[in-house]
Amino acid sequence: MISRLSLFLFLLAGAFSAQAFTFTDSKGKTQSLDQYKGKWVLVNFWATWCPPCLEEIPDLVALHESKKNNLVVIGVALDYRDPKEVLQFSEQMMISYPMVLGDHKLAAQVGAIPGLPTTYLFNPQGKQVAYNVGAVTRNAIETYIRKKK
Image (tube, rainbow, N blue to C red; front, side):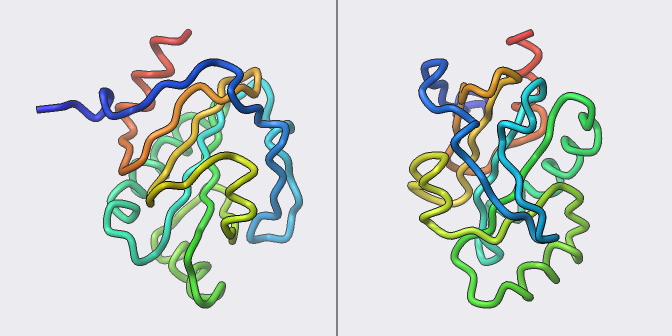
């Protein structure tokens, strides 16, 4: 059986920079990933209709809550009809990390989205170090970060 960690695809350091990604979160605050330098940043592209996306949300919430000092999770909702539905869904799922109502133009700032969910991981220096297509787990992410320290 292949472990979740082995599904985490590693990229060359510096392939993409977090500085290029700017977004407006669901509270209307404009941000850039450059603001999070010094922290690990996990950008998760998802949709409310996507079962693997829904499966990983509790792990992402737990990861964000437990690592607030050195990791931030940013959720980017794609393929939605009504923004209000996404925001209500986020509340029902008790998503505590920043939520972005995205589109494929916004996603292109980070990289390709070949399927949902797709997750990109940036190191504290703002360099993209990994990505994953499919559900990720808290354990896989924590293990990856621990090995990089």
